[in-house]
Every structure is written in C-alpha cells, then in structure tokens.
Image (cartoon, rainbow, N blue to C red; front, top):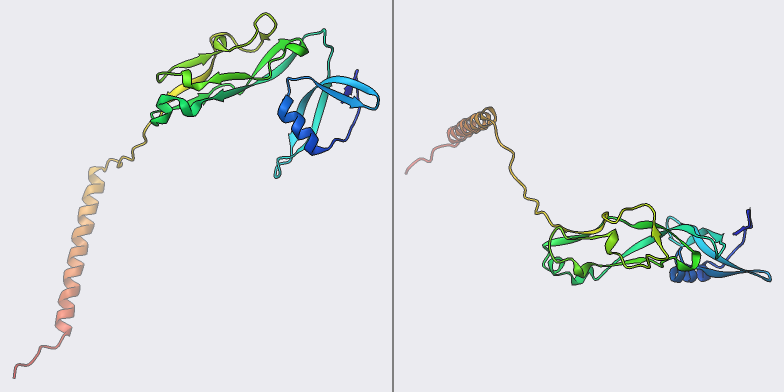
Length: 202
C-alpha cells in the first residue's frame, strides 16, 4: 500500500481480498484499515497465480479525494445472447475496447462502461465512445475520441473449402499414373491365370 510516497507492505486474506476486488474492481474506493488508520484507496496492479488464478499480489493506491486522477475503466458487454442476428448465427458481437482511460475525482470514477449488445440491429452497427452512458460533467475520457467504436456487430463469414486448381501437367500425370496402374494390374492377372492349372475334363 502507498502511504504518501512510501510503500508499506501488508499481508491480506486472499479470500477476503477476492470478494472486495470482485465488488469494487479498480475504480471504486474502498476503506483500508492499517492499525488505527483508515485510508481511502483504489485497488490496482492485481496479479493472479497462473494456474489457480487466485490473487497473489496487488497494490492499494491512496488518493486525495479532492484531486482528479486517471484510471482504466473496463468495458462490459451485456445482452449479447438477446441480439436478433446473434441468435440466428448471422453475426457476432466484437468488443473492440476492453478498457477506456478516464480522468475524474476518485469518488466520480465509473465502476465500468456497460454496453447493451441487443441494441445493435444490423451488421456493421457500432456503439461508439460518444454513445456510452456516463456523467460527462464529472468524467473525461482521455485516450479515445467520440467516434472511436467500442463494440461492433460483424457478419459471420462462412468458410468454404475449395479444391485447389489442377494444372494441365498435374492432370496428365494423374492420367498416366492411372494407365500405368491399369497395365500392371492386367499383367498381374494374366500371370495369375497362367499359374493356375487348368481343370481336366473327365
């Protein structure tokens, strides 16, 4: 945890931290008690175990409630399964931005940007940054313009296997090989016929 400009190492219960992180994410202030001191902090730099995916490290960012800060806000797509073209497997919803950087007071940071995919009616429809629902008087998006697409409804392209074109030389080689095989087969059958003793009629 950062205390002023100094970092203070702390050990937490991973289960309790997991619950807090799931609820607050990285843009919601939480109360952090260290001894008798109570700090308002943001969770950041969370590292997960590569196998168990349990949190093994995190940083707690102490903030000044009266000063604006920058933070990465995640994009959450909902109702994808309710989209008419997704239901008929004619299109797929593509999330083009996972996170969006914003500047705001710590208490005004959005928890997440929620995008309703069911509102996309036709292939090629987009939900852009300007379509996002947030308080523009308190929150400023710093790394994207209003016209940048966040989500796109894209057509599912059918992949058809096509036979590779055969050149004249390859076709001739196949015919020759077939003819040679036929002659070999004829010779083999003729030889087998000669080896078989003829039946003597009584």
